[in-house]
Image (cartoon, rainbow, N blue to C red):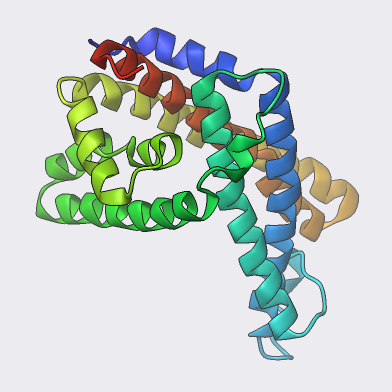
Length: 243
């Protein structure tokens, strides 16, 4: 089955524009806020005491290094865990409620394989890009559903890489167009929102608040990417007879 570019984009938007999508966005914003502040606080602990230039723009709290380091790691883990839940929600099409199994099923295995699979995916794209630009683009497109197989089908990252390659064959160009449109939308849209937020919030509450607002308000665009890829994943799987 050939991927429909238009319905992938509009269908992905519909998957996000639901009650569950709104809840996921709010959760991302809250956890993302904690992660930002914790990360900036961690960086601040490594700055010399007299290195104040530019540091005032970073939202941070005055806490010991072990505390902010732990908070940074926990917030990162929470964001990855929320990604697992979000993918399951968007792929299933649940719009009003989130089944308990989406939180519990193979949570540790999915988390570990998603992290490792993401790293391997990034390495493959990097190697392909170094060799030639085209192999890098092919790797980026061909393995883009790796974490979906890990999260939705509870596969290990090796099987997920293989199945993503199999599922996307014959649709690399269409997927590239979808991903390119997303890149433009997320990059331009997120950039505009970030700049406007930084200017408006910065004028009212100062540079630190502007940094926080800029990062938090750009989150909906990353969630849109998950929604669109979920729609494309479902389309291709239905054509493949998997679901």
